[in-house]
Amino acid sequence: MRLLLTIAVTGLLLAVGLAVSRLSATEIPQAERRSGYTFMSPDTKAIQDDDTANPGMLWVLDGETLWKRKTGTADKACADCHDDISASMKGVAARYPAFDRALGRPVNLEQRINLCRTQHQQATPLPYESRDLLALTAFVAQQSRGVPITAAADPQLEPFVAKGRDIFMRRQGQLNLGCTNCHNDNWDKHLAGSAVTQALPTGYPLYRLEWQSLGSLQRRLRNCMTGMRTQLYDYGAPEMVELELYLMSRAHDLPIETPAVRP
Amino acid sequence: MAAALINVPKKAKRGEIIEIKTLMSHIMETGYRRTATGELVPRDIITSFTCRYNGVEVFRADLFPAIAANPFITFFTVATESGKFDFEWIGDRGFTETASAAISVE
Image 1 (cartoon, chains in turn cyan, red):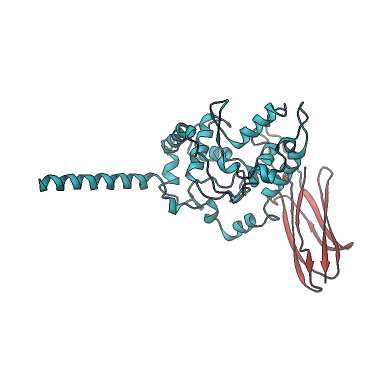
Image 2 (tube, one colour; image 1 turned 45 degrees about the horizontal axis):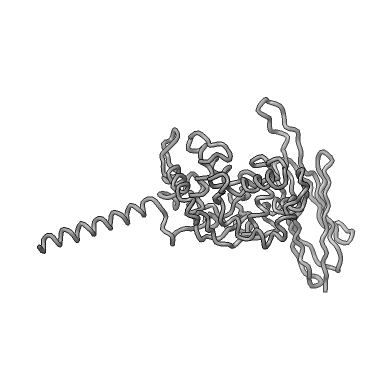
């Protein structure tokens, strides 16, 4: 009897141990998560910290102009429906991508802005990575600065988070790499001269010094996919949004930094 | 929709050395790049930046290719009297932008 009990207890302990180690081998523990900001040099941090030095603010200023400009056949501006942006858009970026009931799938902030344009302003959707779309997205997201990320809290999003996680974990491309091989397993190391980081999208759209421009999370993901020599998903592809959603769920509770600066 | 971000202290003591920071939105196309079909992308850069303090020029810079997009220029000057800083950027293709900022000196 005692022997049986010992075996049972040992078995249980082993199972618990395995479960814990499997978890830590794939995902970063909550307490160890760090924004990409913490990996940057003091000089680059200084650019992000000062709104008159942060080039991302140029897009935010443009976004403010666009927010107030009447457009489309409805001749309405964003401000006509949403009033004071600092109240109406505060915290919005922290919960996107969000579930859209009409489409039955998650949409990201850029897609939401374009849906608003087509449905309510009767205007043409703005192309991905166009200056206007980046500017509007940056202006909306900036209102959530400092707000903890809550994206993926909606239970309807669960299957989509899982799909995004699958893409993140799956080995792909000519180099046979998964996102996880760098961003979960080796985030504390360097790839060439650059910090690998934890793939926590806290500041998008952000100004990347390499781009000399503001860019979306999808642009960044496509950069990584090129590096992995894998087939790129199109801008706005469902897989892209699922990946965005999973990444935002990883960044749960970290504050929004938009417009962030990265090297 | 070119826009400038200017950082001038609102108040300063007479004789104090103050830092002025300016950021201008511009693509700064070098003129050395080619398109996929081999055509040269024409140069489009800011060529000159000036700052006047109550009409007196206190800082000037000539800009050339190989300066990053959205040039960020900072410099120091001595706060002598209350008044206005006027900034002017001039560039290729008839680009001109101006901005100004007020300061009160005690």
